[in-house]
Image (cartoon, rainbow, N blue to C red; front, top):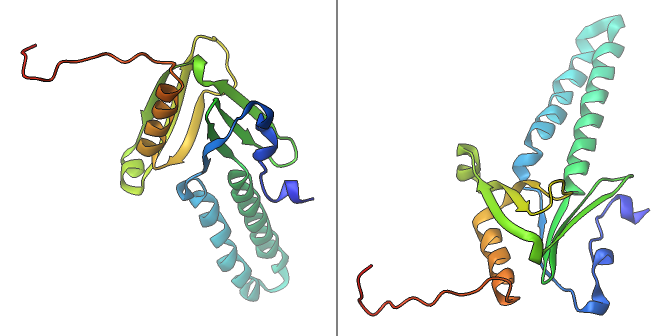
Amino acid sequence: MGRFLEPDTSRHLLKVEGEVVIDEVCKHWAATLPWCLLMSTSIPLFAAMVWAGPLFWLPMVLGAVALLVGFWKCHVAYMDRFVITNMRVFRVHGVFNQHLATMPMTRILDISLTQSLFGQLFGYGHFIFESAAQDQGLRDIRFVGRPEERDLTIQRVIQRAGLRTKMSVDVSGGSW
């Protein structure tokens, strides 16, 4: 029963191969903001039951639907995890039907980071991973908190794995 309430990303690790988690990313709180606002509309709807008279059931049903849908969507966002390991990146999401999408570090060709105005103000962004494969399971990762740090973490893992070559630059004062 616990697997429906708390995501367990460690069961997807290749522990025998020495895979370790570098960073596990939950969705930013901004991803759940619309659903929290929907849940908060249930309060005035429940209060309206007092004045609805014999039609009290209408605001009661609307309030219950707003509360349950908002709670469910917040839980779905909570169960969505993006994981950076020393070998790959993967995303696990879903409550009853879980979906796992993975991409080895060797396949990552390009990472794009998009931050809207609100994303810059509140500290979240959206990643787009590009690989040589045309159709991939891991492309868009939305509502990533502290995206610049996460991007640097991925770049650092790729560099330490020796997947990218270093270019030596003479910084002694030569001109370009």
